[in-house]
Amino acid sequence: MKVDLPKNKQLILFDGVCNLCNSSVNFVIKHDKKNKFLFTPLQSELASQILEEFQIDTKKTDSILLYTPEKVITYKSTAALKIASYLGFPINILSVFLIIPAIIRNWIYDFIAKNRYKWFGKKEVCMIPTPELKSKFLE
Image (cartoon, rainbow, N blue to C red; front, side):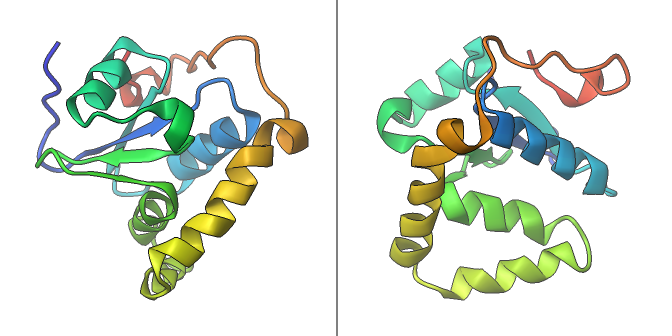
């Protein structure tokens, strides 16, 4: 399966069993007024192909990923802040934190990611989108 995104879309890869990640996806969907984003869980076949293409080990990355039609991938805090930059005012103001060095931002990100199951819980299976949202999900 080849990943072929429309030029005006970006693909968010997320942990489909993580409650925090699922809440974040729902937040993005609610605030994505320009219909910029598509989604796929990291547990999907599509995500596996992207991860393999970029040689990303999810056991070490533990991250949200943002994939663009130009075949560029960002992860961790950079991905989260770039996503926020497309969500409109006032959420897009968060992108100002991109000026902070990634090593600092990712330390905070990694701390939250490491504890997300303990703090927010975990599902047994990936979320299934409602029929209204199905078009936003690849796989």
